[in-house]
Length: 302
Image (cartoon, rainbow, N blue to C red; front, side, top):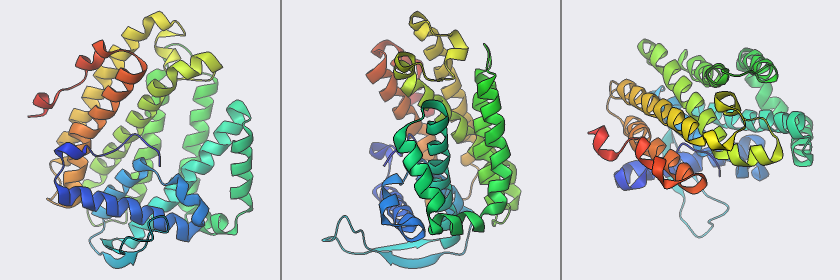
């Protein structure tokens, strides 16, 4: 269980939160079916939010029941969701894990990263699923390789270049799925939603890891805003807060035009409250309280 994109429960109707939990559990169950029970531990909150989007794009739904192996005393949950969306989200979730393991080997030569990478390479189930989505892998792999080149040759002022490349990666993932969806008129909007989510996740992850990365001398894109000087943290927090405000406002403006549905209400909640709650928490825990006021307040959404 990891990730930064989460709905903000206090501002969410109970029926929508229950739907969110069902999607999260469904993704966990699908990862177990596709890759093995052990890999359920990599179920991601971020990919669950993308699953909202994938499920929204398919009008044909499937009804099925799931039983959680970690909560055997609870009743089975009845889910109504697009199985195609679920399978795609499961693949994306584990492909990101695979990419993360490769990145850990490249950057820090971590033993756990090497073990995870080799386990995936030797797994028949991974090979089967990755072969099924070979077309999308062939489209996103060059984007990832180009990002690594940007990272390798990064210089001062390249922060937007790096974050935009990551946004483009998520945008393509969403766009490729939307090509076979039921809302062709929303293709550009779907790409932009993916782009914004991807760029935001990248920036928030950099903000969250900044202090540790300085100590361990690891790559962090924030270094290319104001360098390694910790005295400049007020400046980069200001800049990141402004980026955050722009991205969440743009996201809200796109989503409100969608047809009324559970997925729309969850996405609106995340854009207007969830993302804001995450950045406030990180700034408060890892920096200082003064900059909390630089992010949007609830009143600014009204």
